[in-house]
Image 1 (tube, helix red, strand yellow):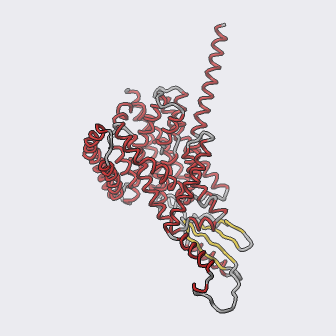
Image 2 (cartoon, helix red, strand yellow):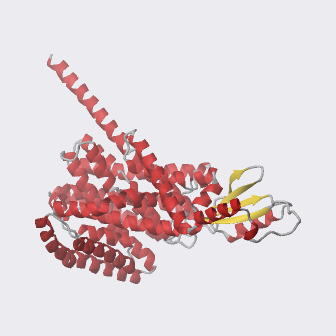
Image 3 (spheres, helix red, strand yellow):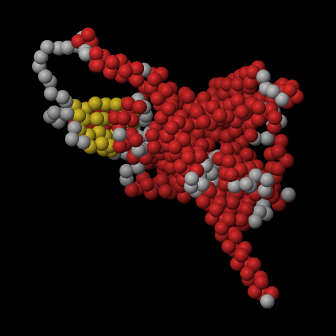
Length: 542
């Protein structure tokens, strides 16, 4: 035990010092004034062509507008969409002289019906319902497709989001994409997705049992915290090389480096739990260790994220300390006051084996109030939703009864909207130069080395076999939905540029996709080595 404690202090201490050293060295760095990616042609036809500008640079917009408007016979139409501006140059229609027919009364019956139908389609409610229908249909289709190749359905839902965004549908069918997802409708989708995420984080919090973590936390905490501190260090190190070229203007190195670090450190606890369940590892020592490590990782990472958000939003050290102080008081109040109160209510529910509408209403009230207070303090509403789930009683009957009221709506209806909204903000088409794809590959390599390598080596150091250590590394490398949540927070706070956001989304997708094949490869190699060892032993005996 003393050896493991010294090992834990050594790992955390050394990497904490290295992270501080890198941040201290980079505090005087400045991002380049103009790090825009060149305009990208996205459509070409006999009628005209279009192009996108990645960052809303007024100078570039003015220059391009003047250039193309100055050409004879062309007229530039501008569409605002996501974090970009889409220009569409079209040949104006020939003006036909004659009496004007502007009155709707002069329309034929057929034209009136079509006009009315078109207006109904453009109605905000009709448009939102159509968007949800398309999102759910595409998400289910991609989810079923990836399950055929042994991947969790969340991978397909992430693919579906990217497919619906400007990277594929928006690139090849820009006018259809703008019609289906106009800029004015994206705020509504964002709010729906945030509500879905709040419910989801509430469920994730309910799945964590702090008492079990205390009992099993010895080696698991060492592995978990090593799997955070090592990739966090590598993320900060990566930020020192990327800050000047890729950071948005007016973003400090501290904010950029901290977000790159936390983005490299996240593990998707729900996806990991689903993979363990699907592979029948739930009751094995490996499965129990991986689940415990991921749970400890989730708690720690979300606490670190709350601190990072507080530092970024506060701007100054005193403001950040004040925010962190309020957050600590809020957490203690939820754990010591609200938690025991809801636990007393749950006793009655378990005895009756039926959850009343009043209890569900109380749970929803705690969820929404906790999210609201967290947002008010400045540590993000999702942390509050997560904390509300953590304080819920961990009696199996109560948890199952309450989760059943929320889970289906959250996972099947609202989360696909979040994936689609993330896809609408992902611009893979912006990575149109070789060095950008090189940077993306470097991000993926660093993410895998930090999370997979840090988890596997720390597991080996605390006494796990090589097979179990590598398996834990592969499972902890799963990022999935949790990574996308962090990235969207970074983009909303304007810490990550659209280009970096897109690269990190691809990293989340790649690391989640590789988990299943990595486990299969580790099991295959371990089995072959076992057979080879047994064969050698039998040969020696003969």
